[in-house]
Length: 464
Image (cartoon, rainbow, N blue to C red; front, side, top):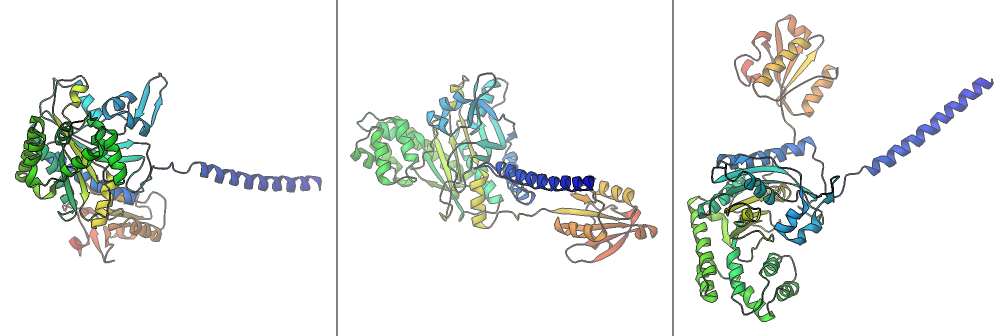
């Protein structure tokens, strides 16, 4: 009796311990919730994202852009020096075990500039690079903006010709139209940093041009009072700030008025360059997507010439979808020879919003070409068929869990298998396999030695 009672006590103790363990696991699971601003992508969503990424990369590669790979960490001071101290507050930065200040890469342009300088003498110009990868910024999470985000960067180094700027606009436009967007869906708002800088210099005031251009970049994001305060803090009087803002509304056919107002070679040259870029965009077949917008400034300090931002034409996606422009001084800033450069970088969060609004975001569903279903001791034949189908470039699954016929068929339906090839013991006795079309439910038989046969993509229709 005592032993029996002791056993019951131990059992009760185990039950209590088990419940406590379960509670601890639940608490631990809560501790492992996803970090704010970071996202998980499950297969269906990732397949849609991959299709969009492949489309953009494919367009860039069709223009001769070559893929590069880049590191996740760079020196923190590189971003402070090249993008302004303001960006440091947004970095995921820390001191590594060697005592170095490093940051998780918040953007790619400084990195590709550094890479270009390292091999500058050996590279054939122009250099055209493309890269898709994640980036990190510690900033306020909002629609289309996360702390980890993915971009495709497209850059040209070594050409100052307007055709290089136009080619960047063309790659961007072709990528969007290949995704199914039209000129009614998006608009490239094009400007020139030297027009802005030259106009600011023409005022009788001690203007901090960099701060004033940053104010222009914030123009659509803040109230008017705050915007004019920022311009005043940059050195303009309130009256000058209002006059400057009026100049930014100058239409394209009146750009010569800006040259007359400033009376400087800088503005004259910038206006001519902008007009030449837009003319080249016409030749590249993308002028219809471009609109003059001198209030487009791009906030990063390294931009120099033509800049642009892509917007949703309907305004439903209220923020810039992506942007780019010329940064001719950056290579020299990294110790290289003076080298003109231009590029753009679509991010997939905001681009996704535009595609979803326009109804062209790919279907978020996994797809499978074939499921090879095995019944009984048929693994050798099923594996042979699966291998041959995969060798032709198809997505093929087969059972690895010992499931029943019905469970396998249900799984094949769940992964959107187009065709199921049933390899059963009874079929093999007749030297056959069964080929089933999952959409219609129709099925027929095919000679086992003749499947897959000579067709690249054999289906039910080939044997019915």
